[in-house]
Image 1: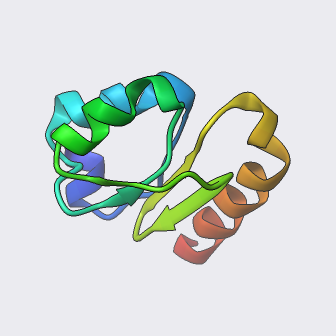
Image 2: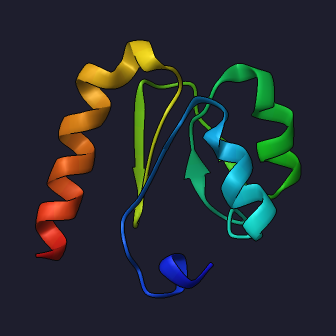
Length: 83
């Protein structure tokens, strides 16, 4: 929660979407994740998008390890913007 409150880049992929659900920081956000937790994400108040990578503010999200080739550059770009 603290990292989100500070606007720091948060990257998560696959089932890691459960972490921001537990932290209560998904409401109103647009993210992607592994389809197995899609309902959990939606129930937490986020918009689920079935795309390889989704950037919403400080969140950089991806569905599965197969999406790493597009997720990593997006994550690096977001981190570089903070520097």
